[in-house]
Structure formats: structure tokens, C-alpha cells
Image 1: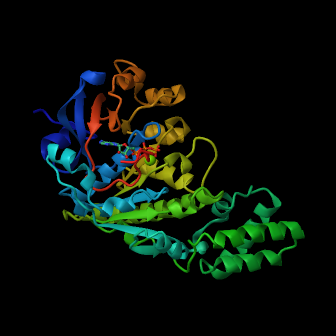
Image 2: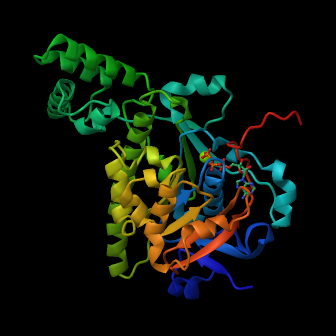
Image 3: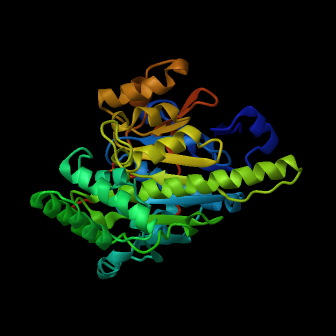
Length: 420
Ligand SMILES: Nc1ncnc2c1ncn2[C@@H]1O[C@H](COP(=O)(O)OP(=O)(O)OP(=O)(O)O)[C@@H](O)[C@H]1O
Ligand SMILES: [Mg+2]
């Protein structure tokens, strides 16, 4: 059976075959109810990619992202990879449980239910909330407030940089960086804002926001985000505890922004060492290729406005191929995703979409090689979760597919009100 490998050029296919690929699903041949599954569709995991996963509600985006995480972990090259899942809604902790519910379907695919050894990290100040809800976790994380620039603070606290509060914050942070380098906490910033001559309501207003920020439970003495990129590890950053609170997405973006900056910096240093080794004829891989999987990605990298994660993520997208970082961005609405990220996607898995603007933004990325419109491809899909199309910039081809069933439990299932 001829194999379909997306995201891999012919040279790599010839040299490595299926090594370093993962099974995404099976090619769907025929349309609608007539469609049947044919050849397996594999995805390249060995090279850096920017991948978009799209589809309207309940079509299988989070599920598919979990499938990719499973494949990264199961791959024979997993020792050269590390996986970080940014879990905003708290649906990935269940990867630690086998998907017994789908044992029958898994058997048809030649698989068994499996549990995955994932490290789940939660904000240090929110341990009791997780314990109360009985949600398992491995460890906590903190970020060092001293690492944030005043621009990042303004974005996180939703303050206009040019407002009185923004100016006061900027002066305070500048002063603290001069006197304490990166060794200051939120309480020092709160004390610092009192020392400038601003009117009382500005000082009180800013103090209030800083006090709230301290309650996010993410700030500590150091940023403990290092271990996350260890070889062969899968790390889940569970930030569901921020729920829909107004600053919820800013805090999440702050964490993602810092994480991206740190990984990119480490990867670039490692790459330099690797290159020197290569020049001297040594083959060494200092740091694994990091895959960051971000669900609800439009909240971090929106088409309108800026979050603390915008610049770091755009930098990943722009230079990621060189240092070796991969990004998977899942969202309901590709039209709401930053256009620079969208245009850099070399792989797209799109489940069913209906909004015209979303289909148009998809068409724009891959219009050069489409024989028919995106809408026609999507309309041809059978109406069931897990069906979609893969657009592969490498081969300039489009494949309708059904994604494979998950080996681990998916906690984000659509609830129903039946008594069964
Ligand atoms: N390949 C598949 N095989 C079987 N079932 C699937 C498959 N893909 C998705 N599903 C089913 O579809 C349901 C919804 O998927 P998922 O939670 O990924 O939706 P979503 O697109 O992330 O939705 P939302 O936008 O609301 O987050 C899953 O709980 C699962 O039962
Ligand atoms: Mg989802």
C-alpha cells in the first residue's frame, strides 16, 4: 500500500522512510457517506513544523492534538523530542489513563488502550484547588516576576502603556531592574509604585491590579520552567484554573510567552554548539527538538491586539526551523489567528468549518495548489467527528482523512444529557 507522509520532503522519505513519523489517520476515499478509509496518513515529527489544527466546535481539534502528542511520545525518535502541551481548558490530564472506552475501535486499528507518562504542571499557588477537584498533577511551576518587562506587565495587567498607570509601572520596573536586577517580587513592585509622585487613584488602581496578579498563583522566586524540555518528556501545563476570569487569558499568555522565550534561547545556544560539533565532524544533539502544542491558540496569538505571548510565538514561527522548535496551533477560527502565524503554517489539519471567513483564510494559505475550493473538500467529508482534510505545503497536496482513535482517554468529550 503506498504510504502518505505529510510534512516530509522526498529526500527525507528516501533516506528515512517512515522513521520519525507518526500515524495521523487514514486517507478517506470517496465523498460523504460513500467515503471509506484507505491508506494510512503519516506526519513527519523529525523536522520543525508550524501546524494549524482547525474546525468548529466539537469536530476533534483537541482530540487530534492529543493524537499528535501520543505519536511524539511513541516515536522511535522520542528521545530527540520533547513535547509541551499548553492546556487552557484542562482536558489533557486524562492522557495518564488508557482509553478503555474505545478498546473495540482501537483493536480495528491494531492498537490497544494505553496510558501515557505525562508530567502535569499546575500554578504553584493553586495546588489546593486542584486537590479539591481531585485532578492529578505531577508538580507545580512558578515564574519570576523579575523576568518580565514593563511591556509584558502592562499586557498582563491589561493596562495601556501610555496611561498614567502604564507610565508609573514602567518607571517602577525600570528602577527595580537597576537596583535589584531580576531579584524582586510582586510585593517589591507594590512598594515601589508608592515612591513616585502620581495621584492617589493611579497608585491605588495599579496596586489593586498587582494585588490581583499576585493571587494568580504563578509568581515565585524563580522561573521553574526548565525541566519542561527534557528529552523524551511530555509536559502538560494545566492552566484551566484561571477559567474565564477577565485576566485569565493574560496570565496564560504570560506563562506561554516566557516559556517560548526561554526555550528559543536555550535551543539557539544548543544549535550553536551542535553546529560547531558538526563542523568538527562530531555528531551531537544537545537539546531535543521541542514541540509546543497550544489549544485555543487564538487567545495567545490573536489577529487583533497583542498578548504577552504574541512576540515570542511569532519569533518561534519566524525562526523556528533554524533552532528546531515546532508549533501546533489549534483554534475554532483560523480567521482569528494572527495572519503571520497562519501564513507560516506548512501543515494544516482542518476538521469541518462553516464560517466563510475561516474558509477564506484557509484558502489563502494554500491556494496555489488547490484544484478545487476548500469548501468543496470540506463539504465532501462524512459528517462525523475526526474527519478532516490535511493540507501539506511540502507535497502541495490535500488529503481528506479520518484521524486515528486515541489510545489515551480524552477528557474533553462532548457532554450529553442521555441516561445511558
Ligand atoms: N478520530 C476520532 N475518532 C473518534 N472520535 C473522535 C475522533 N475525533 C474526535 N472524536 C470525538 O469528538 C469529540 C469532540 O472532539 P474535541 O474535544 O477534540 O473537539 P474540539 O474540536 O476540540 O471542540 P472545542 O472547539 O469545543 O474545543 C471527542 O470527544 C471524541 O469523542
Ligand atoms: Mg477543544
